[in-house]
Length: 369
Image 1: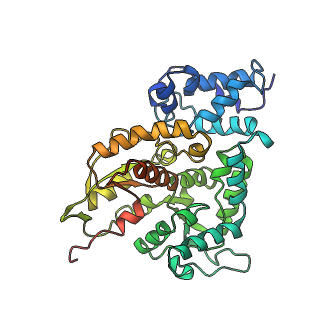
Image 2: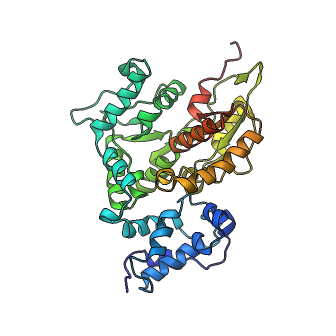
Image 3: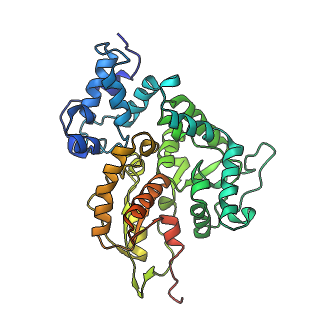
């Protein structure tokens, strides 16, 4: 009998009612009960009780094939904390060399602060801009932490290298945001890939280095940091900008732009934040709701790298919807979603542009402009 993989109280909450089935993207793909939250919890119980051995092939497959989007949580009448159970499961299933190689490599990079900072500098230099001018920073103390509490902008581990324009746009929208360059990763990548303790340590360290309120442009980072540090310490950008949308509107070809939103799964399902970005978008453009806006786009952190075939199948339906909506922009609030949607739209040669919320808001033209 294994007995020590999951928190028993969390595992016992599931009453196998099936409300989670229609909300689960992998169940929709496969129609396989084992690929649903209810089915996976049945597998978790079999592992916990020793009915299945730890090296069972179905356990390994289902721990990997889950998106971790947590869409099952808001619809669960029993309040099952499925995201937490999945993290515990992967801690057990992905120990040591059993952790997928791409995840291991990304986690190693995220732990090396100097490398993260170098990636950001190289990316900005490649774009033809002065690295020192891209993201204004607060003056660091001797140990690299900001000198005083205030409002700190989280640069993100890979976001700063892949999408430096997002941080710049956030600081244009609110110049009070400071962004210490020496900051590290929040640990969400580790928590979601079998190193829950490491992810929590990294979050606490970041929280000590960024005192006061932490504002992030990543929905996944917001959910992880809020779970570890407390919701009072963390604000996702749309929460932070609520009631402070730029004056004016976004125009395309002389008309009010048509925009839609792809939710961040962890932001919506983990923190319940989804009205805020929509309110901002409606204030500056004509907003069009996607039928599947609340459903995962298939990025899901490392999922698009670990399970590319399933990820592309999920994304294909999403791109169909976006193109059918007749929008100019699809807006995201998470860097992984942004990368996923840009890739899918590029493959389709679509005219729709995927942008981060911060990037779209800084394009708003003032009434006098």
